[in-house]
Length: 261
Image (tube, rainbow, N blue to C red):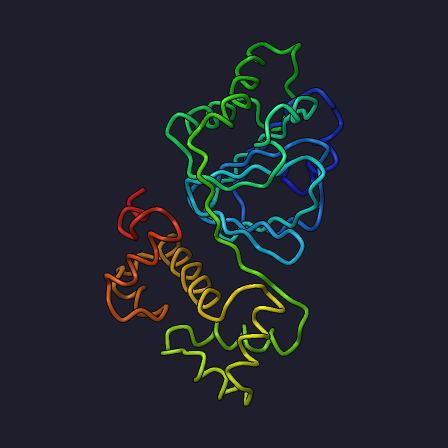
């Protein structure tokens, strides 16, 4: 059973944990659950879209989506394994962790615990089942882990002019791009360009440019064997040190360490 086919099944048993492990590259359209979702991204990259923001989830990270939160989920790489647990939500009000979207680096302990749940793949597990306490313990430790969220967010917009600018930046991110150059390209003033970014996506021009460059770099590190120096150049950085510093700021990891993991 694939994840799309499993969507109606997830909420059928209110007090259970539904387990789903799937290797895929796909788009799961807008949906929500009455359960909280814990998913671990293994060997690729995933994207969660909520309202007009897309959250990037690299390999060896997990995310928590609270019950009732509408979202679109895209698995961006065919080698990605998404290991998901949909938890009963009766006690979610006991800790703020369970009430907000979060993306976090996964510890070795959590990875091993999530991998262990593959024995229940495609099943509901409840207190009538042997070892249900294991799943209870897994959920209960989540707020206790080192939960420094990874805030890699790509804003989107319905503004047509802004969409054209975004497409231009994505296509030309390897070039030298400044507010002056891009404003001139679209025949508007730098002041108007700055205001357009703030009013439509609530980020500055430089913040947005850095974000799309980092997301592209993450994708290339995970999907290709290109040298880090080549990746840095292709996303618009002309020194390895400046690229490495920017990458660490976004992911809390150096590019070489990120690939090694």
